[in-house]
Length: 374
Ligand code: F6P
Image (cartoon, rainbow, N blue to C red; front, side, top):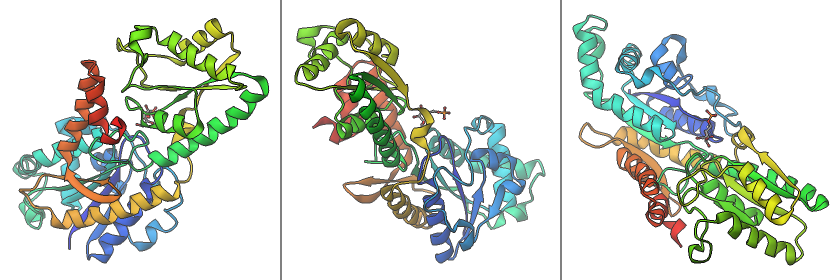
């Protein structure tokens, strides 16, 4: 009977619970024993009651609950070999040699490092007498690792969508709709900062969904019409926002991604945008930072679905995995569940940041997601 550890790691996202539920229940159906590892990698490092065998009823009611009930953490000790040695000890003591991790690219990379070091870590624990050979006898030769991407940012390149991103998008849209009514009443402008770290997906999608006047993205820094505006994104924005006002609009909505930059890679901050709107257009402007409200609340139907179908596939991937196959990441492409080599996905994601740092914005868009380019 395969013993599968399940953990959620990094920033929480709505739908993580649905994936824990699906992995647990499919594992049971497939004759495996699931274990919840509480507080992400911290639980793996700490062991004890942070690693708990799960049954069918442990995940009852999980589908509709936001965040992650088993907890998450951005765990610093796990980034060290010493931390990973402790994690290996706790895995061996619980007889676990398969892990499904729901998290962002950093969390999935951490898992891959643990897998690469696994044999050496096990040998070291045996050699130092911390575990016995008998305790390791039933373990596979390697650690099976499968990643699911839980992140509101939708910043993983090799998948169309990540668990929690659509719920977050709904939250942003609801919030901006609320701002829109007060903006219209006072004929104000609102500069709304949205999350996404270095990825503009939330900002772009929200901009389309709420009909924003202007969106500042990391992957396509303004001004878009360089021939006319050179580096002066403020003037380009003011011209466009002003034009909508001339056409009769009583409000202006500008969405600024938290990772927004100009063409010289200088961050664009909401207060700067506010100042431009006040100075160039005389608009009464307010800044709203949506913050963690974007990450909270019950997952939308799509994220429950996404987490569930990917959770099913994660267990199948564990059962398929061999020592010689690279650790897989479960993703989505054209509405199909896919399995791609985890580290290829991570490398592709990092290459977006590299392209942006070289100011190759066209390549950044291509690498982020082919759909962005059309
Ligand atoms: O990665 C998810 C995310 O919400 C980002 O959008 C944001 O930049 C970051 O996490 C916030 O991190 P924290 O919750 O640690 O403040």
